Image (tube, rainbow, N blue to C red):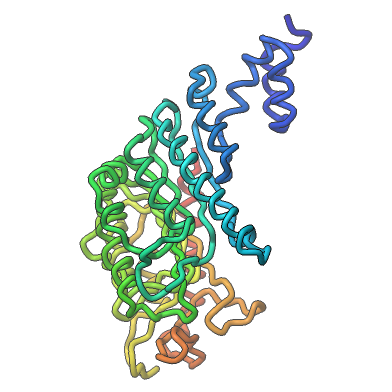
Length: 390
């Protein structure tokens, strides 16, 4: 039937780009059967009517839907669509946006038709869109409404094989009707991998006295997103556009199967429970990534006082997290640091006018930080190399 062995032909097709695969798929029945499993494992969508209708069409085609393993949705930043100044044009765009939301929500009601679907990734708009950043909105933005609608729809029509959920750029806005529902709890309880990022909408980091932010980080995150997922979760990643720590109640949480933990802009130190949360999982953690996670110094901090420094934490990681074979420590630009500064172990304190501010003082206890990091990296390298030996 083919001039080349099927195995070689399959390999060549697998290396082709999706456009070429789509063309090959319609050239013959034989190529159709070879290409279909390769063309549909990941469905990438935008929040448009056309994409929603395509998703629904695939869900209704069992010969294709059984090969779908991942659905990725990226929401278009509709603010860019509002550049024309004429009010009528803006109104037409808004109507189109809500039409797309309705069609997309309807299409997601068919997700349970994808029997092999194990991963859903939703990427929402990366900045805060609500009119009032201080209070919960009476009328949510289209993006926030879409977040709530899709989460509700996914939980009500959960794919049978789903084990990974990625929620990028969640708006920090509590909603008990959505997050505290029995369907959402059931979905979270079934997950093995959970990754979510939060958009807070505050100009100054550390201003978390507002009700909506306090409730979101104190209640929605620990009690409604994390608590139901404790039993089965093996990997957890939490990211935030602004530093958080004192706001998150980690103490009641324990994930007995957690092997991978990634934190971005989650503070350690004063009035936080992050260090205790980390070491609570020392018996299972194999991968740990800390990105821009400074230590928060207490109010009125005096550099001569005894305090838990990075060296203390890193040495505890080396001695207590005995299964850890991957460790990453980063500090991206921010908190008054220069883009050229190689700072990974950062200390900050809180000032009412400026939020979290980089501590430039020479801290006596921090003099051992670099040495402790080198020791930890060496320990993990040795452990990893040992585990690779036959």
